[in-house]
Length: 164
Image 1: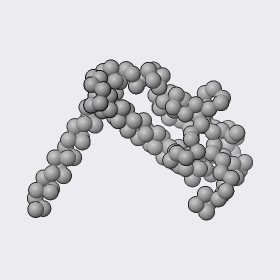
Image 2: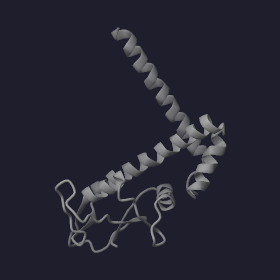
Image 3: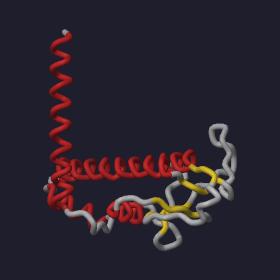
Image 4: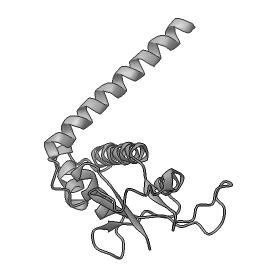
């Protein structure tokens, strides 16, 4: 099992460690059928000769594919490095995954179970053992998300009315 590291925000590290635990403590193992695994596999590059070790706060297992995936086969003995551009892509992917899950969780708890946003945010933070983020920050982000969604729906409705 080969690992590599990238630098991401601390709350995303806590989220990944709680959601995707591996056999080794402090290491993340993404499921083999997830989109993030495919992203990692496609972003793997040969390690430059002047770089001997990886820097970062998120260590994860490099996915291993036995057969050609979409016509690509990468031997993880030589393809075991994530470039800075690839790390940026992974950071964005994990950021989006985290916030999508937060918004879905808050809406589900509010609409299906009648739990208010403060308690839902506290439950989410405790479920994933996140200490680097406050429930107020999550709620504030969720309100911004809802406002953007309302503006988008209103804009679409006006476009529909104008076109007919």
